[in-house]
Every structure is written in C-alpha cells, then in structure tokens.
Image (cartoon, rainbow, N blue to C red):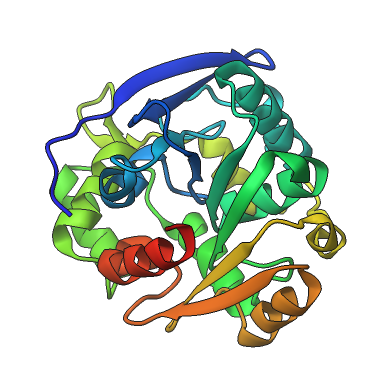
Length: 279
C-alpha cells in the first residue's frame, strides 16, 4: 500500500464555511469522495486514498468542525447542514457523478445526502453505521467524548491514552490519526483540533435531532456496499441486514479483525473489499 504520492491541500468556501479537502488526483478517472466519522478527518483515509488514487480521482473532505475546515457558526452540526455542505462542495468542485464513501457520522451524512441527490451517485459505500445506532457503541463513543481530557502534556501522552481504546489499530495508523486530530495549545500542551462544541453537545445532550434515515434508503438506486467490522459494537447485524433488504441494490460484507474503525483497524481487509466492489 505504500506510495510516494502526496495529495494537494485545497479549500473551498461553501455556505460561508471554508471546507478543506485533500485532492489525491488522478484527473479524468472516476471520482471518489471520502467522508470521515465523528472524530475523524481527511487524513484518516490516507491508506485508502493512496491505494486507489492511481485508478480513481480521490477527494477526502474535512467536514465542518474537523481537521482544517472551519468550525460551524453557532455550533450547527445538524444533518441538514452537513448535507447542504456536501451539496455546495459538489457544486464547487464539479462532482456531478461520483462514488461516495462514508464512515460512521460520514456514513449517516452520506445516506442523508443520497436520499436527496441519488442521481449524482454511481456507487455508495456505508461503513459501520446504519439508520439505527447500537446503544452499546453509541453509548461508548459518547462516554469517550465526555471522559477524554481537553489537554495533554505531550503527544505521546495522547497516544498512550487513545491506545487503550483501540485494540486493533496499529501504532503507525493510530499516531497518524492523532497527529492530525491534535494541535499544540498556547500553553505548550497538546489539545484537540476539532470544535470542542461537538463534545459539549454530547455531554449536555444538546445536539441536533437525528433524521429517520430509513426513509432515505429506498431512494438510493445505485449499488450500495455496507461494510461492517466483525468486532463492531456500533452497527448491529440485524440493522445491517435490514439495510440490505431496504435498499434497492444493497450488499453486506464483514471485515475481520476490525471494530468500528474498520478501515483503520484492518486497512488491508477493508481495501480488499472496496476493490471487489469498485473495480
């Protein structure tokens, strides 16, 4: 999977927000847009992007409040605003027919977007998330957000803390994730790069209500791949199978040695399934 290819950092202004993304090329090839999860960022996809960028024009987006994109005015992290960002982003960069890949929160945003823009999608990949959240996984993620310190003395302290929560992720992948998820604070310590309002909304239960995504699935007529980590606590098997039944053209695969962070827990296994679906 190693490659010397490096992406170009680009930014577009959509709905008054600067959205940063990585453009991996290759021009003229089928376009793929990658959407990270709640605590992810565009660099979460580096193994996937590097693998596919020769045969596809890969774009990895920092969604509002994450990575190098602007934080949302007024803490607006509603599904409607994420979808509006995606629609504006597609218009800005000329994505009128493309493959959409979304993990967790990005998968939910992908389903909501697809329900309104089905004609734009050639294929859709939904990674370890569904219209219904498994209470165990949802509760775990919320608890992790509530408990995590706001600052650490060093980057190694961040790695040591997060390592306890990531039993499958390799050290290099975990360090890459955290490198782009953190920043040096004015006091010399290390803190989180994402908008801490996201965490406060989880702590206080003040986040926007979630849409009923079951209503969107029947509208998505393109081929859809649902990828589930074999050790996940977030996408229940019953929900995943119901998704396949509800979608016009859906299929389900399982990736071994992977929890919720499927493509970071087992990059090789995920990439193999993605090749089978896309190529």
